[in-house]
Length: 450
Image 1 (cartoon, helix red, strand yellow):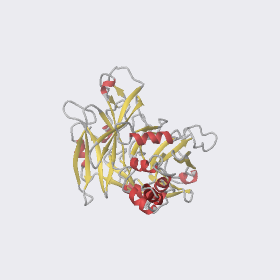
Image 2: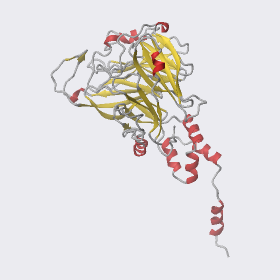
Image 3: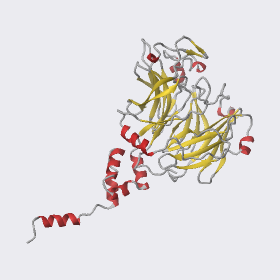
Image 4: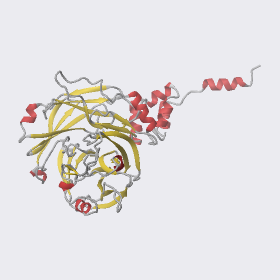
């Protein structure tokens, strides 16, 4: 006689998992990457479906990758988001799996003594450069995936291409181009914006061809502006980041440096340069607010240790732009620090302004913007016991100089106006490092991007 449990056991044996298509629809509804990672650990079938490249592409379109940490551009490595940040656990998993020392990327050739330095981060990839000391053009590049440890070494821009331009080359600013909708996610493009005395040139390297080409060129005069006075490289002693500090929104790169009252724009879809001028006088309005210096050449009249120059940053909101400007970066008894948001209206011409008030505990500086976030660095004056004021090249006090300075980094979300601490770094006393935000999916959700 069969036991009562026999039919139940038989039914359990005959159970089968839903089809891959049904599983995909279920997994697409999981609310967070952490929940998706937990599901992938249940069984081999779940893991196979979840780690499929096409599925992950669908998931990423519905749920943008989380912010996992920051990357320093001068050997500081990766700084994971720290608790209580919501991505802290995912960030620790990334640290265990990835190599942010880039030891797996070989040097381009003998004689290149400079180490690899991160210059841009996008879509889980890191753009590295390696320079011959004292040479602007002789710069090799590499695009790598620190998780899969895959890389492609990109040769320098051909000297015959850079030599045919008018004037002296003053700066070469490399960036990773955003992927287009129909582009293979394993392909990439490196754009080098070359800044000459008379014109701007965009050199583009495609992993598909693979070779460099001249994709865009405009003279400063045709852009409706003269060449910026005092154009400098990103390593200047006053923290000015030259023209190499870009925010990417909707396939366009925006840079406010060094003008402050206008933006240089490179549209990567049309490969065209343009300039957005301060038609509505937004910059003049901000300049008149208490705490902001009286002119563009005095924007950096007061720099704290550990800080870099604060620049207006561009964040996208659909087809419109949001420009964030730090006002009253240094707290006072009268007014707290504020971030002013200038929102472009639907007509593309008028701008509306509001502000987000920050904590009085810190002195702030802007780091950049990406994926709907503005990034801020912040220091506390009590690290020295008294204020340090820097006016041009003069330091007005006799306090002992510290070798390092604790810098806290924050993200300000455009949608919610919420400020969250990401991590803390120890920085050189006078810091000229750039910091890049790293968005991505940690293992096992990450797939090779190269």
